[in-house]
Image 1 (cartoon, helix red, strand yellow):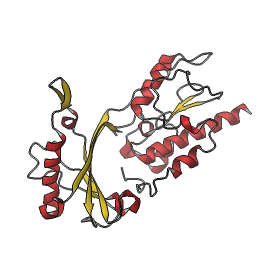
Image 2 (cartoon, one colour; image 1 turned 90 degrees about the horizontal axis):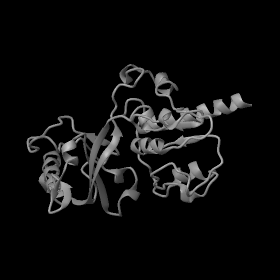
Image 3 (cartoon, one colour; image 1 turned 120 degrees about the vertical axis):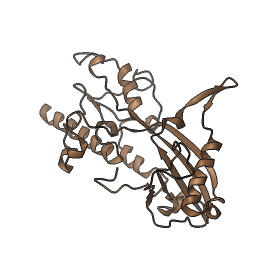
Image 4 (cartoon, helix red, strand yellow; image 1 turned 90 degrees about the vertical axis):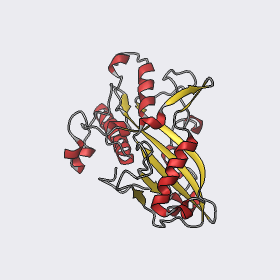
Length: 274
């Protein structure tokens, strides 16, 4: 994740980045951040030469599956994409009074990847960070925010039926108990017992699996390779493009790089038309 750039958190919470990116968009801001289930043009009509699908992998796949193409463009089956295997993630947020045990704005990685109190290993903490050390806007005055992440374990996504309801096999309470036992080994029970659990997020498709790309292995790529447009083609049809972390490296940087590739491809296409 950190092999080519330094990752960062958004410092403010006012949507500045989104506004800068969309203030010149030729449609109402109400169309931004709107959940879409199909690509049917029922509520929004845009007269455009190009369509760019820039969503999470499952949504991109679903939109392309539903896309109806008219004219001389390829048929729908020609623009479908295969998305990488999912990597799941579970994040627990805790509130704590005062400063956190690590005051530097860094990500703390678990270098051992196993602790004596974890049992079968399904709830091993991968990393911890304190976003409030990056920006005070992440927590109220006098408080700090802790983010604890567990990755790549499908046991935490498993559900079973109880009393007619689908519930997680490992409940949030059980998950919290295991995580707290690990946190106590990191910073002592006296320090972490006072932390208050705010919320648990279980994300089945948190990130695309970073398996070797179709044309070359990521490990063999140079910085120039990663910026090349033929890592994974972004143009799916004559006027249909797709970008995201599933079209490059599975990072924020990869997603942005993929978007840049789409922009360059469209500019190149327009120049050829002139």
